[in-house]
Image 1 (spheres, rainbow, N blue to C red):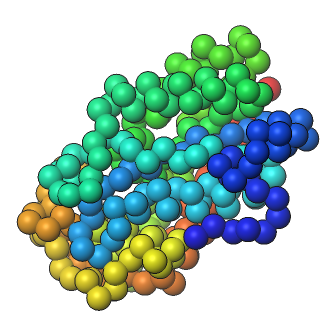
Image 2 (image 1 turned 135 degrees about the vertical axis):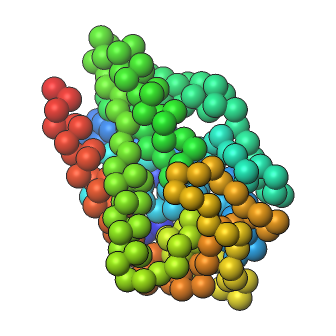
Length: 250
């Protein structure tokens, strides 16, 4: 679910003329948000990352006041999710090439700053590696490209610490955090009646091991209230990092 307060900031809701005028009025930053389309058990729709990425990006753009949001990229590299119906796997090289082409398009049509972000673990490292390469290419032409990862990595650490401190069960893909974040963004994408214990949690930093049905751990204590709190942290961390990046852009 996205907010309709104020003028549009999602490019897909705007005409070309409206985008031109917004850039001329100072909205010279574009958020290029990456998601994933993937299975996460019977309780979460496969578009979970797309919904969350769009929700956070719109909130961030409105708080920044100088940004618009490119259409969310729905496909990314996946791992064990690829075994389950509905998952779309994009090879890493293709993923990076698509981001490069979209960034080029945004810059050619007037944006000065492109910020690469992601709501999916599988795209963080690729975007972080791509951003400085694109920045070096476009900087001589007066444009900058940055990666913003705090909204994902920093927030996930904060969420993990909160869940541990408050005695929530261990969970990861399709677990308490994953479910709550989607529930807080748009309840239509969650099936509360399907919440159940998934595959056993592997050791920390282990690859996904999604068992028979496609999720790990125990999501049964997830809630939209938790999700809304966690989403606020994501917005706050993303806004703070992007402001730092833009302030240092020169």
